[in-house]
Amino acid sequence: MIKKVIKPLWSFDVQKTERWLTEMAEKGYHFIQLNRHQRQFVFEKGSPKSTRYRISYDKHHATHLPKALTNDGWEKINESKHWTIFCNDKKAEEIKTTVVRDGIVKKNRILFYVYGGIFVYLVVILLNFLVHQVNMYRFPSAVREELQRIERDTGNEPLWFITYAGVIVAIGLASLSLYAMMKIKETNRWLNEEGGTPDDSEEFVAEGQPKFSLEEETQLKRHGKLIIRRKFIWIYAPDKLERWLGEMEEKGFNLYRVGYLGVQFYFLKGEPRKVSYCSEFQGLANETSAAMNREMGWKWAFSTRTGIQKWTFWYQEYAGEEKPQLYSEKTTLQKQAKKVVLNYGGIFLPLTVLFGYLLWNHLSMAQTNPNLDIHWFFTITITLAIIIYSFLTFRSYCYYLRLKKSYGNN
Image 1 (tube, rainbow, N blue to C red):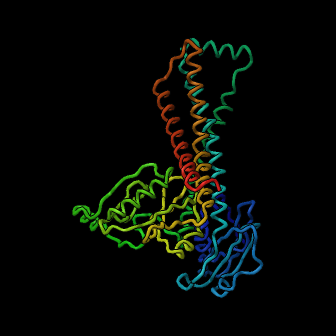
Image 2 (cartoon, one colour):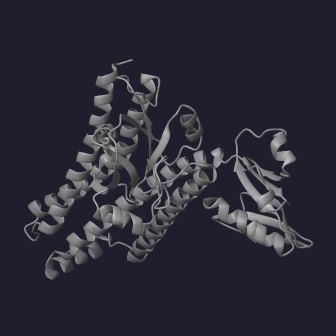
């Protein structure tokens, strides 16, 4: 007996899909084929059993599975272009290896920006429509009626049913794009944790530091042994945060953990020490660098969990005058700074242009039409948004210039 199930958004959360495949196997439906274009999973009815599934994405499929995976019980079931689905009939606690997920994470990064571009484009259309409607309703009723009469007489009366239907479709697509971005980011985070990349939830503290309960932290705060400092919008100037953390260590304040929002920094009162802090800009994720950094003597300090991009900070104690650096080549650090500018510029510049256009459109209509006045709340709000987005873009660009000046043009 063959059973077919359509899962339109299965690739947004591969781990959830894997759990679903396991649940189907426990009901006696065993996966045999994926119809990628139809978003359809094909099952064959059999005896119920517990099977573990793993999904991978790789543009260059290996002819044979690595020996370690084969010996651990992994078996390739189906390939659909770049997607491959594996299974393992052993118990979860007996499985020692897993399938590499790098391809999914990299694919998700690209999709994140694709959906982000679609979302921004649709928001531009919707905001433009909203501003137009608001401006129209600011006309006196007699003027609106005259404009409608002119449209009817000239045959230019808009088809409002089609217009509003288009608005509803745009809102739906924008919501879907936003949902896709959220799910993709969450999926990448879980895939990184699965691969051993730590995260900065309340369960994690900087490597090498003891883990205290919330009650113990409260007692340490009361006795002045645990202090909290706040740093806002540091992600646009991470080099300044690196320097500040090092200065705190020299004063005897050792980084303990960072709050969920990446703003609150918790320090334990200890002995002064010389510590080098280095940041690693990873976009949505970088699942391969953690092990390599640890091999070079670096310890994990914290990683951001909020925001569009991901930052990870590493630290290393040292003696003498030479301060260790995470990147041995100067060009690598400059490339990171350039990536920061391109990423944040790509986010904030379109928004700055969008809000600039909305402000210009609003002010132009108010100045050229005697029936309209300037809406000051709208004007002030949009102006503040332009200032903030311009400032964040400028701050990230200054970060790039500082690194370029410090390490030269090579």
